[in-house]
Amino acid sequence: MDQIILENIEIYAYHGCLDEEAKIGSDYILNLSVDTDLKVPSSSDSLEDTIDYVDLLKIVKEEMSIRSKLLESVAERIISRILNSVPSASGVEVRVSKKNPPINGKVDSVTIVRKGKR
Image (cartoon, rainbow, N blue to C red; front, side, top):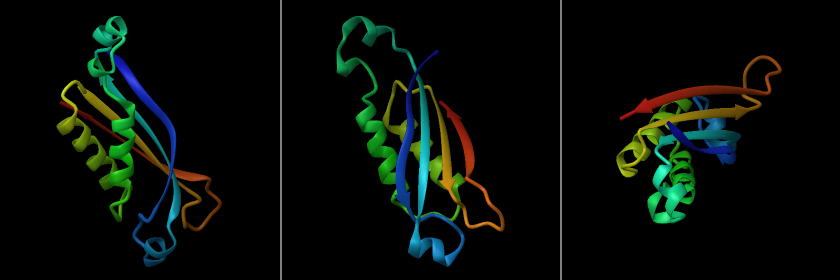
């Protein structure tokens, strides 16, 4: 299976269980992999035959703008929206990393990984 991958998408958002996280926000890094068949677009050289990564980025940004307590919920919304709106996507993997999470210790980031298939 072929993939379209968007790496290291940087977004500032307001997710988390703490009230402070809703007010202050945090930096996030997202990585998105979409399974699809790229045979036709590789021959046609036409944007209409592939998944436009501009559309994928728009979905990620819109879903990240909706506050959630859990990163798992954000990832699930991104997966569901891609699978429901992009017919040629057969699977999606989302990695959401919160940089410098407010936990008792020095941790660069916390990452969750969710996968979904048609």
